[in-house]
Amino acid sequence: EGKADSSDKHRISRDDISVGRILGEGFFGEVQDGVYKSPSGERIHVAVKTCKDSSPEVKEKFLSEADLMRNLDHPHIVSLIGVIEVDPVWIVMELLEHGELGSYLEQEKYILTETTLILYCLQICKALAYLEGLNMVHRDIAVRNVLVASPECVKLGDFGLSRYVDEQEYYKASVSRLPIKWMAPESINFRRFTTASDVWMFGVCVWEIFSMAQQPFFWLENGQVINQLESGVRLPKPHRCPPPVYSLLSRCWSYQPNNRPKFSQLVCSLSDIHRKELEQ
Ligand code: ADP
Image (cartoon, rainbow, N blue to C red; front, side, top):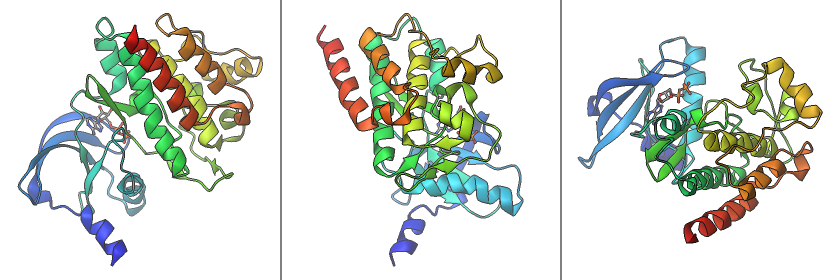
């Protein structure tokens, strides 16, 4: 039966996984690297997310991220390998050797070229256009949630805040742990999250990439951001950001959500800019 198949696909046995060192600290618990021996005998490098709280409510929240990732299949989205639903619960994902994009940008800032930075933006944009097609809102697009597979490939990870929304509908957020400096005005004012607010956040993420992972609005307190946005202030052009890219960002930061471009359009524009950059 169809439903059983899709959940079986991701059922794996703990005996087939050996965990190694700690990669980082997630919201629910530590993330460790490891090796998974697949049924075909292949050895796959994985990241294992653990959950330190074993109460049913927390476990359910923790596993809801894996539930969303189960249905996704895109070259620039971190793929889910499996879930272990018996205590201690684990989420097993493909390992992205180079870790978070934010730290990678800081380490490699003297080596990375503008062309590569545009490539990263294009890859993230393709992942988001794919989510746009599924009516899925990510809500937390930032370099801390992008992982680096290789110097030429980044992937969107962390679906902790993602939700499916019906077309024209939106997800009304209740959480207080919100990334204000990345958020669209309607998200700050009314907790309204849509694909259009994801487009705004993508613009901020592109700004972070060309600023080599500086914090957006680091010169402001969270509480000052909305006034600035409402009086028309926007993040300035980073030195390394090509003018055609910055002009796209200005459109992503239109006050009216309807005036912002779609991810599918942004993919076309960024592809053009990337191609011209390669030809130079
Ligand atoms: P959470 O969303 O629960 O807060 P994250 O997804 O941010 O947890 O994971 C915490 C850290 O673990 C990340 O910052 C990153 O350094 C590391 N990490 C998570 N997933 C992977 C992965 N697939 N490959 C490599 N490192 C990862």
